Image 1 (cartoon, one colour):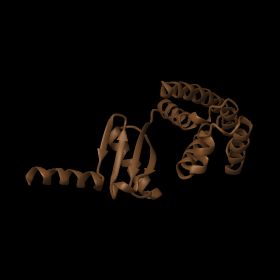
Image 2 (cartoon, one colour; image 1 turned 120 degrees about the vertical axis):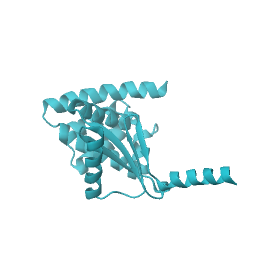
Image 3 (cartoon, helix red, strand yellow; image 1 turned 180 degrees about the horizontal axis):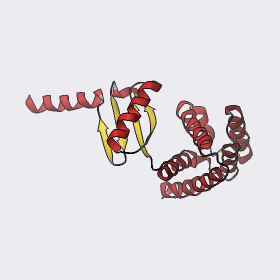
Image 4 (cartoon, rainbow, N blue to C red; image 1 turned 180 degrees about the vertical axis):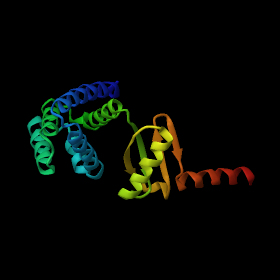
Length: 184
């Protein structure tokens, strides 16, 4: 139930932000801000605590999120949506808002989104090569959402829609271990 509610909240905020960004001709800027914010959330537990803390008041969360947006040099719309989420006690849905906004942007542009998890951070050249390879397989432009999971040991896990390609070393070792158990 809580996940459904968060999803509905996220869809509404993301839809409103999309419309405002489209009007202001700032879709790419806002999308860049949101991607940067998502990366910040992935690398900072303090930021996640700020966003999810029920102890902090509206004004404290609003001040902190506005200061973060200012320091990061975000577009005015990105700053305003952060402030609005904080004032309405909806910062807990920020990650879902970001995902919904980026999904809507990709859908309207006819792009597919690929969730790529690698054992180490990919270089820009590797990311570009991956995007081109995925574009040839999917048949449309692909935006890549990169994550790092060191437990993969090596290789990639790629999800595009309902398709998943797992070339990680950890999965190959698991399969080998299962095969060895069946033999011996």
